[in-house]
Amino acid sequence: MNGPDRHSLRALRLAELLAAPAQGAAASDPNRPLLASIVAGQASGDGCLPADLGLGHRAASHLLATYFPGCRIRGLERAIEAIPEWGDLQTLLLANRARCQPSELLLASILATACAGHNHLWQDLGLATRDELSRLMWINFPGLARANTGDMKWKKFIYRQFCSNEGIYVCPAPSCGVCADYATCFGPEN
Image (tube, rainbow, N blue to C red; front, side, top):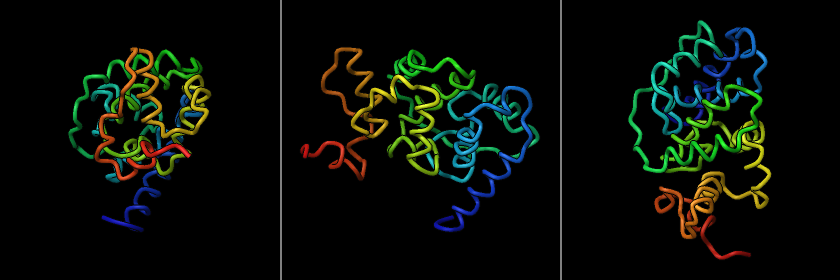
């Protein structure tokens, strides 16, 4: 499915997810619409995330039941390449979390998983726009968001932070060589 059909399907799935009446803290969690966008994107074939969003079946089922109770949308089954730095990326994200919402823990794992994709991080997450990812970063990982003063692409920025913490000074993201925007990220500075 391409173009408007895929976009319409995604919009319908997003509306269905947000119509599910979450209870308690999940109902007012500012991450609920962002999680809905990730789930809707993944279920529509966007991004690179597996059906469990990189959380494992049990945690993904709990996320859906808590944030979108009764909703029958399920993700597409697909594999994602394991990356050796996954745990380090998750640790970086967790060390920089806002400590306001329990969903930050889930999002750290989801973001670390999406870093194995071959596109921009917002695309690999299945989000609709880069602005959604920026909002996600400001809500959940404000220290990292504040540190991204040059509006660097998020995946490149996260890897740069990880490598800087590890004392590694030549550190491309895992899939930069196949990215259509390679020249934008790695071209000469203006």
